[in-house]
Structures are given as C-alpha cells and as structure tokens.
Amino acid sequence: MSDRLFRQTLALVWVRKAFGFESTQPKERAFRLLEEAMELAQAEGCSLDDCQLLLQQVYTRPMGAVSTEMGDVAFTLLAYAQSRSLDLERYEAERLQRALLGDIEMFRRRQNEKHAMGLSVEGIKAKDTK
Picture 1 (cartoon, rainbow, N blue to C red):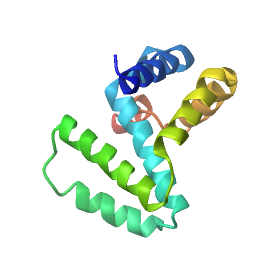
Picture 2: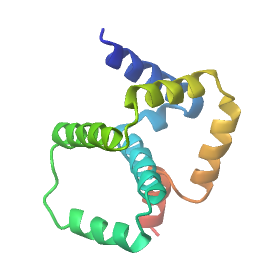
Picture 3: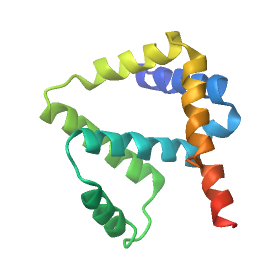
C-alpha cells in the first residue's frame, strides 16, 4: 500500500469514527471538499461575487467524470502549493495528525453546528423537499 493510499484510508476511518457512516459517503465528502476549497479561496481574497460567478459558470458546463475531476483537484492543489512555496505533504500530514490525535468531540461539535444550519447533504435534501 502506498503512503498516499494509507493516509487516505486513515482519513476515511477517522471520518467514520468521528461522524458516522453517512459522513463517509462520496457526496458528503465532496460537500466538505467544496467547503474547504471555498475557505482557501476566501483566505486568498476571492470575493463572494467572484465565487458566485464561478459557481454559475461551472454549472453551465456538462458534468465531468469523478475520476477526472478528482485528478484535476489534486493537480490544481499541487500547483497552488508550489505557487505559495508551501510543502503540501507537510501540511497534509499535520492536518491528518491533528485529526487523529485531536479532541474528537471538538470536531463533532463543529460538524453538528454545520448540520444544524442545514449544511450537509441530508440537510440540503430536506430543504429541497420543502
């Protein structure tokens, strides 16, 4: 097993332990990835208007294949890290260690706060049916 695959496995096992099976599902993971990507864009000074424009543009195009889009996310993150002269592997390892060794209840509280606001795949489905 490669180091990358080992870390992927550790991360998903931790997610299941912390938040339950539903949080391990691909759509929920994609939702969380979107949240982190938006927080990174915000940290770089991208405005809400810019993000809304990009969102509209993305959703006017045909849906891509999951494997292709995941590869594009990974490639873009590699290039982003290098543009910032940051060691992506280092920060990835630090965040994984923080999760594995951290206060799991703190992570659960934060997740529960998001879910209480309807910020989950299930929360969005519930809003769509109203």
